[in-house]
Length: 122
Image (tube, rainbow, N blue to C red; front, side):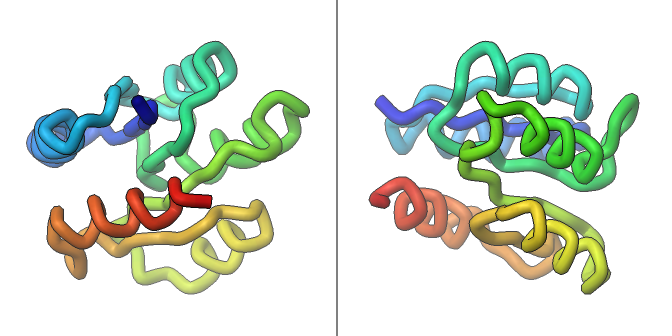
């Protein structure tokens, strides 16, 4: 069973994503802020991380930088989830080797599931 870490502070979205991925047969671990997400990622080494950018305690970009700086987290697969259509964040994410990104207002849950399935094939 593939394990996904969802780092998201918006409770309704976190619940929808968690419920749907569990229905799809994934093991789900969640974190509500970047520090918690980083700690969990470096303990359980999920198959994929869905990472929000705007988070309390430590934002998603800082979490991603710290994850990549750690040899244990340097190759974990990360998809950014963002409300920001901010191209500088997207470019920074690409520099930090995210495998993709989703702008929250533009995606449907089916699209997220399909993207995750596709990214986990490799």
